[in-house]
Length: 94
Image (tube, rainbow, N blue to C red; front, top):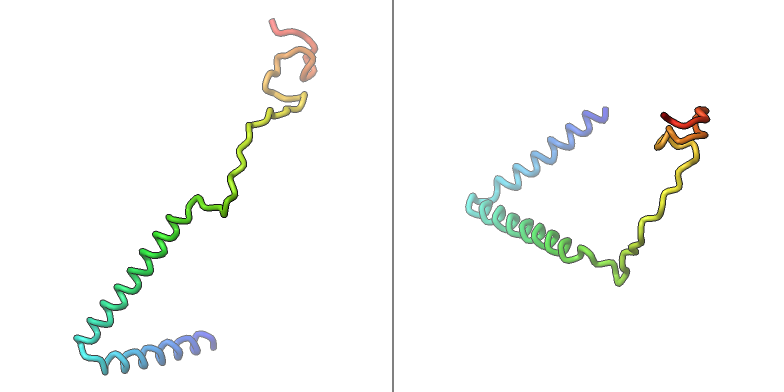
């Protein structure tokens, strides 16, 4: 049922667009296409330039930079398993 509705809506829009475009002369179609191309191109350039311009602007706020803190590892770490008293060995490595 929804698919039939969507198909009807597409056919209706296609028919309206074809009737509207059929009334326009070929020279006018080219002019409309060129105007739309210029408008969308200008919009694209504006969005790109404004995005590049706004990079790094945080309304006066600066990024907080701090030193890396020392990572606290648990006592049962496996980084140095040959240390005495760990992992049940209880002795030194020879």
